[in-house]
Image (cartoon, rainbow, N blue to C red; front, side):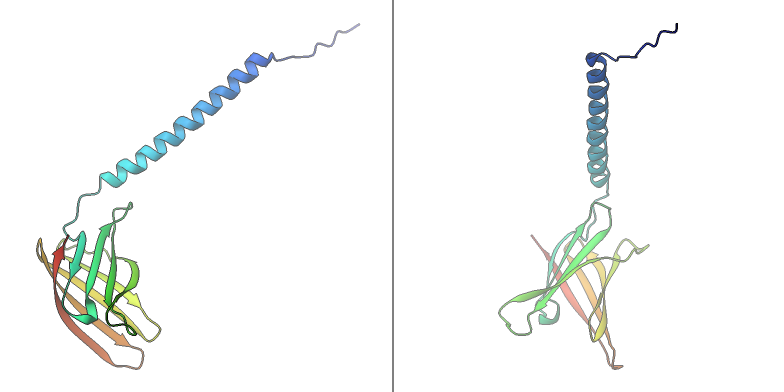
Length: 151
């Protein structure tokens, strides 16, 4: 006669395995979050970061910041069409990668035109921005705005 033995795993061993798995998972999450924060902190600070203002209603302000991916982002502002006492945002855009450290660009696509802003660092508190707009009807408009860094 053959004996059949049933393998029984004690409850303590099951709990130990589950606890080990939970601790391993939580440590993995902590290391991933820490690595992401360290990667963002390791981006070299960029001189374009900050708020840039002008007296030109067509381009009143540009906010520039560095994202967690180390790329520069921008949000341009101009006087609102229907309320000249306010300024309206054009929306966030990632800046194009430029090999020149003192030159960046950002593009906006509108329903009736494509617009490109080219930012050129003059010094730590001044930039010039060349705005070039190509309308879908063939018209082209460009102008340059001097901007100062504020707060």
